Image (cartoon, rainbow, N blue to C red):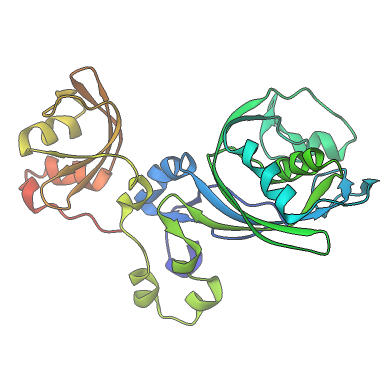
Length: 286
């Protein structure tokens, strides 16, 4: 993708397991500064579980470690799914990419080691039963960052008393971005460079779920020069999308008390300020 767009810098917003597919948001150029805000956004997945068989990895890539008869009805499954809604804790699986002592968990697992993992707080917004046939259960899940769907699959299997593992996983949404609006590498390869770049979304898409704050020219100038400024509006807290003028995305700031601090800013916006151009005419394009 970096080569196709002739970009100097590129980054992603969280990889998928090898067996999974679906949406992978990518950032190019200055947009890479803002990928972390999409990492923190909620995700939506379509997942298929095989009931009755547990594996070493919690998914189809592992070896079977247990098999039990499946007797659950659709009604029983719907009842079992309800307690998984809301605040939950999960222990990350050994075959995960998170690091302990600088080493990813899957590296420990591949060498036959097991290490202690701390439970992590997650939130399940919604679980919908899509299909249930021949011991295969398909669910749609909306969840917070850090949720491991394979662990959810194992927990559902335990709750049903028969065990389960994940056989298919598709990421359908990340924040405001959806799989239905995504484009494949093959589709981009069929376009010329100009048309490829026309497919890029604005830089502020990565921060689209943050509250918006519009700044007048002077506080915007001071903020981009590295100074903190007074908040123009009371009651704002946390991270904010900052704009100087109509659609002039400046970056992301943080409201602390009655002050506004810069957290991630566009270098191009700072160049406009240092060049003493009118902030009301600022346009940022990726």
